Amino acid sequence: MQQPSVIGGRCMNAPPPSLIMAARMRAIASCMPPMRQYQVVGRKAPTEADPNPPAYRMKVFAATKVGAISSFWYLIHQMRKMKKTTGEILDVNEIVEKNARIIKHYGIWLRYDSRSGTHNMYREYRDLTLTGAVDQMYSEMAGRHRCRPRSIQIIRTGIVAAKDTKRAPVKQFQNSQIKFPLAHRIPREPSKKFRTVFKAQRPNTFFG
Amino acid sequence: MGFTRFVEIGRVALINYGPDEGKLCTIIDVVDHNKALIDGPEELTGVKRQMIPFKRLALTDFKVKILRNARQGTLKKAFAEADVLAKWGATAWARKRAAKAKRASLGDLDRFKLMIARKQKARAVNTALAKLKKSA
Picture 1: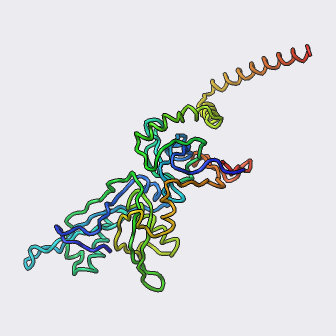
Picture 2 (picture 1 turned 120 degrees about the horizontal axis):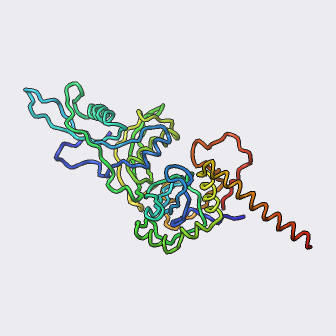
């Protein structure tokens, strides 16, 4: 749930957003459509009583444009007296990551409903794009908390400087002298069609 | 036996799955325990800068001297300086891959020619061996 900002006002939510091939590929691998970030602008439909209602813009994460608009109405309805039937969407744009060539640390503040209550949470991810980090977040929340996307609301996202990161799983990869082996590897066939259930020989799993 | 190949900045790896299968790449940063940021460099190996899971990588013995997040130009220079492509071509690993690819690309007639060539080779070897045995 990102705070709406009146057009022309200061833009909330600083991080430049994104979309990238790697995120797409990862999402394909997990059979979930990759998240994209959209900027949705909407307002109440003008009436005679109010010919010029204020427009609000919100940045939302959704897989499609349609999902973004839906998400906009759901969230704006919680904060302003507005709804889809008496409102209009003025503009929807996808926001893509400006620099998807270096790894950044993304902080995500979120709120989610567990089986017993509502919790706030702060999570960190290393990724090339914000949408990639959001994808990681949804998968991780599903894995660790059995939490579905419908019960997660992203409050805020931002790029965190390496020195300000808090989470150990993220910190341990900030070392430029990082060095670790890949142990116990299962050789992978170069294409899916070459996969077999049974092998003639027990595979070698040590590759130095 | 200890490990000799490590995931580290500058490690050259072979991509063994996906659209870039069979191409070499260089690790330029480690994203997390599952993924690395790699770059070909594109001009030399045809691999674009991208994030890739370690599952799709096979580490090689070669290492290029670069810093984290090296730009393409720097990487290309270091890659060419280390002469990775030539060294890789000379390894048994690369030669086996090349032979396998060559064999797979043969047509019916080519396979026949190969069969004849192998027979001729075997014959030459066997006659020479028989001669040596006789004289011994």
